[in-house]
Length: 471
Image (cartoon, rainbow, N blue to C red; front, side, top):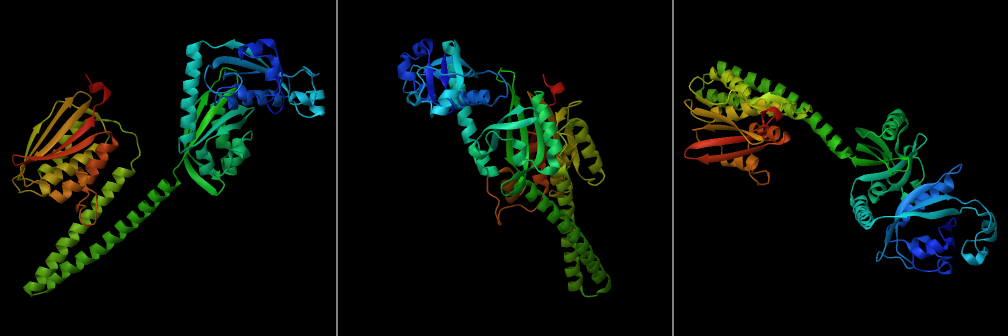
């Protein structure tokens, strides 16, 4: 048994406790308890002692630590479980200011003191595991950039027990300022009180939370990806971690791009329609062959811009679709894409080698990706092009190969989309179709490859097989 004062100093130690440390009781009296622990164990011990001091009635608290003897360090540390209880009052040991307990008043009253006792020694593997797990946690807790808060649900309030440096950097509050306070009082805006209470109740019930939330920082409100993780220490109390990833910049950038894109597409379409109409009017009224040729070129390039605008609209719709991937039949999708293009490209030959069905986890966006691959093969090749489409299941993936015997994808296009080359002003490609293919497939966890061999150009899509299609 031992007694700690309000500052965590040993004011009394029993013979049994001294024996754990290989010393005598006099050598322990007046020493900070943190000196007797292995590195990194004091915060949890202090938290347990503080919780007993703060309790309104009699309440004990247990914690695990490693006793390392006088002088600290990890060498020879013994893993133990300690239980703290309120100090019953009266003097302990010799008393007086000379025992390291503070002033005379605190000695007489026992103010801030707690009684501790070693309940049991932990087996060596458990003690070593405690050390390793704590070191791993401390490393992650301290170095992760996201804001992380460890809290305890007390009544209905999440009381902060610890925060990492990421929290201080992201939210702008010092650890000493918030420790022991309600988390909600610092970071939850008034209009989000009900939401926060719901999250706290779920944590108290042992359920995890995941949401996009707005939270208050020292510099104003920000948007976060919030994850709440409940955990238990086996002492009957309710704990949790809150992890906040600041996504304000990402969401604002996305919003800005969406607005600019909508405005650009709308204005481009309207203005280009006017230009196209004027070009056609010039062609109908002019007798000069040179003017007619120039007007025809204007109309041709205007129609190209309108097609690009339509591609951009389609790409935006595909990328803005935040629905989770669902199972679709790749075979049925290929057949639908091909059938809708047979009449538009009557000179083309379609050679299909498909299984009866091929369920993949991509969702309806697969149709847009395939349509862009097929149209790329049709639009940039001779009218009598042959398009060969093969599909097969391979282990956990499905492969779709779209090949054509035309001239192939221009190097500037495939290098920008399929290669590792940086996208620059001179190297970016001119179309969006292949980018849509890449984005759709990769968002589903797949991969796009391109090869040119023996006069054939092949775009291969590797897609995740649906569970029911796996062997």
